[in-house]
Length: 275
DNA sequence: CTTGTACCCTGACCGC
DNA sequence: TGCGGTCAGGGTACAA
Image (cartoon, rainbow, N blue to C red; front, side, top):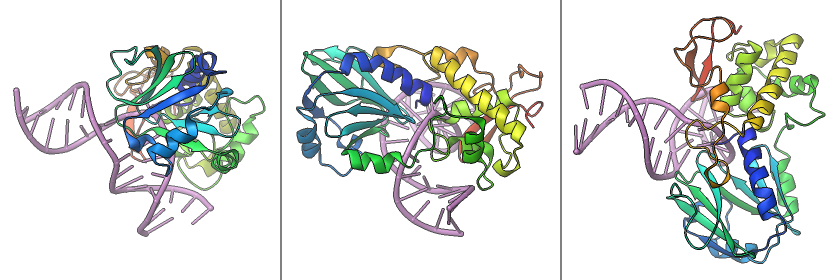
């Protein structure tokens, strides 16, 4: 479900609660959320007793770092977290709790995931290095220049919308912010990446960073399922100009926003001003 | 190598 | 009310 701004919002919520805490007990209610080949028993055995030294993010993945490795969380479409005290999750909406992690301060971290597409990987540092190397650069990193975006995108002839969502080119961009960044940059999402000019790459670089930063400032986009920790909603949905606005008027030029399908996912764009 | 498609899973919604 | 079809902020395995 969440893209970079949503996962970063969750990270900021979780970090002060989890850093310095020890995982004292783990309960797995649905084994299919263990995304590596570990059995539930092995997963539990390796996790219990670990101290959480830091909570980080890479692309759309959340990282709980220990001394000797890390727990990688992929929320995919419907993964959520809540922290509470006692056996019952603190939110009525947590009807599909798939895992619980007891902490040494008496609280519990609950992971809820209706569709169970998300889950966890328990990795050593060297295993993580191999996984991590598949990601492209972080678009909000201070050193991420327009030329870096150009290098990442202008390979092959894929439509630019699909290329933006390719995590090996740029990390953290998903279906909502790919549409929004292209709309703001006034670039047709179906354009092959090899045809983009330097000026278009610069516009896309500025737009992408603007959109991601703005959304982060609004704690992300709560369009359907996404919530930050303990049910907190984002508010960037009120500022979306293309995504989900099929049939509405374009704020740039007044034409109708269209919906098309690319790679099996909806793309929203304005044929009037995106070329 | 790159690109496209099927699939994982459940629930909400829409038209008949 | 029921039923089938479609869709959903993702990622992976596989085919072409």
